[in-house]
Amino acid sequence: MKKLISIVFGLCVALAADAQIRVAIHEEEGNQPVIRKEIYGHFAEHLGRCIYDGIWVGPDSEVPNVNGYRKDLVEALQELKVPVMRWPGGCFADEYHWKDGVGPKEDRPKMINSNWGGTIEDNSFGTHEFFNLCELLGCEPYLSGNVGSGTVEELAKWVEYITAEEGTMAEWRAENGRKEPWKLKYLGVGNESWGCGGSMRPEFYSDQYRRYATYCRNFDGNELYKVASGASDYDYNWTKVLMEQARWHMHGLSLHYYTVTDWNDKGSATEFTVDDYYDILAKAVEVDEVICNHKVIMDTYDPDHEVDLLLDEWGTWYNVEPGTNPGHLYQQNTMRDAIIAAMSLNIFHRHSDRLVMANIAQIVNVLQAMILTKGSEIVLTPTYHLFKMYNVHQDASFVPVEYQAGEIVSKSGRVMPDFSVTASRDADGVLHVSIVNPMADKPQEVVLEFDALNPRKVKGEILAAPSIQSFNDFGKEPQVAPKEFDQIKRKGSSVTVTIPAASVVTLSL
Ligand code: AHR
Image: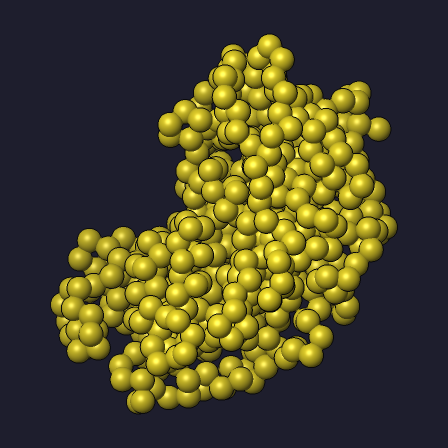
C-alpha cells in the first residue's frame, strides 16, 4: 500500500493514495521558514579520542598540526562549513570544572573522566583551545554548563571569563593570553539533567534551571541564548513540566534522540543484514514522531513559538569496534549511516518552524562521526560526505514537497517510508532537491514536477556505495565518496531521475 506523504511544513500526517513516485515541488509557496544552518551542528565531547588524538594533538606532536589542532581535521571541517559546535559534553560537562582548563598547561590539574572509561583527563584542551578552534572553523561555540556537580557561581564566572571586557575574570583571561573577550551565544544549562547530569526530577531541575539562568549575565553587548536541558526520546513529561514551570527563562529547550534498537546489544557498525538495516533505519526515522510529539506539547504552552527546540544530540550508536575501549564509543560508519543522516536531515528540515539546531554525536572518533583518525591518518566517513553534500540547504528557505511513498515494515514491526525527499531554495534563488532511496536492492524512478519552474540547468551529485555495509578505512581506497550524477532527463518542465538502490542524490536547479 502506497501512502501520499504530504510534506507540507509543520504537518505530520500520511494520507492514503495510489502508487508512483511523482514529487510535486511547491517552490512558489511563500512564507516558508529558513532551514537554519545550525541544523547541521556538531558536538565535541571529552570522550574517548574525540578531543585528544581527534581534534587536539598538541603543538609538539609529529602529527601535522596548526597550533596543536590536527591540520587534516581542520581542513576537512573548514570544507564542511561547521555552523556550531557544542562542547565539552555530554555527560562530561556535568563533571567539568572550567577553571582546571585555563592557565599554564603544567599547572592544570588532572581528573578522572568517570563517565567515559576512567581515562585521565589532563585538561590541556580547555576554554581557550575550544574558542580558538571555533574561530579557526568560523563556527559558533555552544557551551554545556555544569549544573550536576558545579555551582551557580562557577557557571556565572565562566560566562564572565569568556565575555566580559573588564573585571577580575577578564583580567585573568588576559593573563592567560586573550585580551579581547569572545562572543558566546549558546549556553546549555546542564546536560541530561534527568540522568548523568544529576538524576533530577523535572520539577527540581526547572527550579535549578531558573536559578542558574538568572545569574548567567549578558556582559558588554554579548547576548546569551540559554538552553534548558531537555528530554530524551519519549519522555514527554519532562518537556511538559519544563514548559509549564520554566519557559519564561529559556530561549531554547533541548532534546536527545539516539538510534539504538537494543541497548543491551546495539549491533555491529559494519556487519549487519538487510533486515538489521531496515530495522535501524526505521528506528532512526521515528525521530519524526518524537519531534512532533514534543512540538505538540510546546505548542500548548507556547503557541507563539518563543521557545525553540534544539536536538542537541542525535545519531547512530552501535557496539564499539572490537578491541577498543568500551567506554570510548568508537564505531565505524557505513553507507547505512549516510542514509540515516539523509533521512534524518530531511525530517529536521520539515520541523524548521521550531527546530533551530541539531548536533550530531560526535564530530570525530565517537558514535556517528564525521571523521576517524589513527595516528597521522584520517578517514572521512560516509556521514561526512553526506553532510557536505547537504550543505546547500544551510540557511536556505524550506520548499514544501508532496510525494508518494510506500511503507517498509522492519523485522521488529517498525514502519518507515521507502523514499524521502527534501527541497530548499538558497539566497541566489537556486533550488536544491535531495532524494533518498533507502531500498537496499531496488532503484527508484522519480519524476519531479514544479509549480512554475522550468529548469534549464540541472546539476546532480550522488552518494552511493558498492553495498550498504561499505565504509571508508585507513590505508584503503575510499568505498563511499560523492560523485557527479548525470542520470537526469528533462521533459517539458519536469525532471526524471533514476536513484540507485541505497543512495542519496542532490540536484541543483
Ligand atoms: O554521546 C554520548 C552520551 O550520550 C553523551 O555524553 C550524553 O549526553 C548522552 O547520554
